[in-house]
Length: 624
Image 1 (cartoon, rainbow, N blue to C red):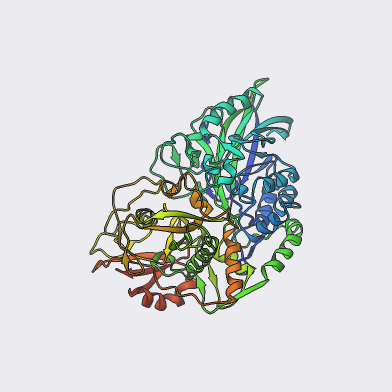
Image 2: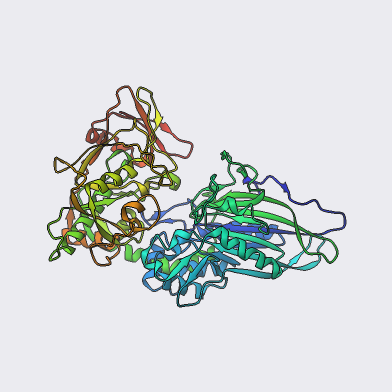
């Protein structure tokens, strides 16, 4: 096996002398998010941070080395870059991702939750073009044909002794049960069942139909906690089920195996096993290729049995060349996308960036909130809610984290083009608005402030952000002002469990303290209306008070066209409560360091650049 992360061999079942042996190399991608080419559409420049075209070159290397290979994807491949937006505008016809995957010879793919981002029709159009099955065992579509639950591929293989044989490879796909809850339009058209309950029904069926080996393509993360009913991240629990031989995990954009251990029984990050089963989670955006090697044995007329296995993730390095065939296949869509993104819509007097979103200065969020509030105010004219105070909530989508030190919004002053909108607002969410009370607003902000670690007063250089909280859960509500007391425990855990603690202090609107009974309209997005997740208790059952809205990105575009030239005052809506003698460390992209003096002045806090992390982030000390 080539060098990479993990790869320690595990003994599954002892072999006997005289057995025939098949070695099957399973190559896996996940969460590609339309990163087909080594190109950064936000900055409009080439990049070498991973791509499907580069993965294709690595796949070809493995195929030259191994007699028997299988290539699979684990979902979230249709949404994520402007290429996906372009394909969706044409209804998914001639989809560049499917063209590239057909060219690479994918054997199967699971469906992920983001593959529904442009609607069921676009996904089904893409599926009709695929020369491989798109699998979703726990998905039921109402009123039309379901996607296949699983596939059993009859594949000619070559044994270790050079003899031809046939291997029946079972592949089953799972996606998060929350998929329908994350988009209310989907809830009326399909249902998503519990992953583990579905697996307990389906895997025995696959074995009964003759599958020699079963590989679970689980668009689901690896959680150290036992799964309850309807759990989102259950890849580790799948490893405990009889009949499953190997697992491809995904959804959370992590890498597994990896060097960092997880303090949980049954999750071996070094060996790459979940409850003893080989498993991989190969990052996202083509950052890694998962490689599972399965050694199967057969004695006489008995069936094939898994004997040994290895699991590893190979990084897709910057010097790995993209496959020319994939470049050619995607080139027409790439050119049309670049042409569309070059359309000028407005201009900005300021640099629009998200480098300091987690310390209160984020012009990108301010712009999103300005546009959302403008749209909702217009929509409420002539209704019973006209004149009700309108607020707006938005969160940073590109704020580092697992995306790395380049994963920040950064738009230079001057002309604003359509391509800049994908940098400012990455997801195809729709705009919505809800009636809320002052108590709701306080609860909303408590959830957002839970992103921060609890800080001990008087201690230096404590980590500011809790890595378990993604930045897209950090909503800032425009036109309010408040302070966050980091000396207090977070009000909510990462899974949304209330702790009874409170961090929000001095919450005001236009200089007046907010009472729990005060009433507002809050502009937000369709994802926040999900019936699950951190904000669900505040939104569940509440209909949007504006008609089904356009995509938020289109609202921002129309707002900018109407303004023609925009000036953004990114004065902080919130600040940390002062803690004398205390400092915290936070990460930002190196590209934001020239902004540090201005940010320090806007927040009235001392900030110092103190080094770099091993992942290339700039480390900044904030004095509280």
